[in-house]
Length: 153
Image 1 (cartoon, rainbow, N blue to C red):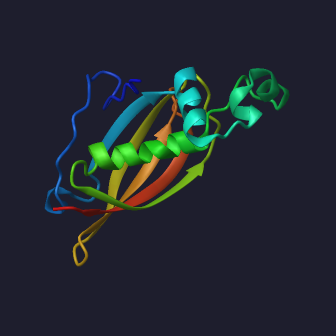
Image 2: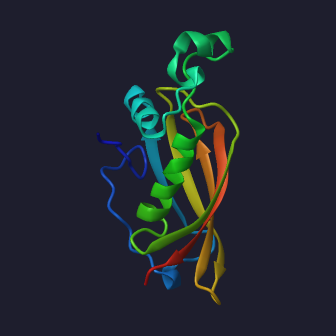
């Protein structure tokens, strides 16, 4: 299955970045764009066994006031791992901590842009803290969070 990650809606396929601690600066950003699809929901269900009808049954989700199935919040949160391990910092990332808050539901067909911004550089321990914001195609914030990384090199 191809997850179709892109740096922005106008760019092609991604490649793994190779930032080292000393390459990063406060305010530096990287982003990725992904689309929520039926296939991704099915793959996430297969991996996790989470068969809550809010995520698997359009009729049930509509009864609960949603236009259709709600994507798994942890599917979007899991993309933070991709943001860290591929984009910021990339290849030399050692992900240490992730926090996330889901601020709005995400649905099949939504295109989510995750932006990571370097917020802290802790030189004494070689650790970077990155703030994360996820927005949908309408610019609505659907996820906020952060992650901390060390470096393998």
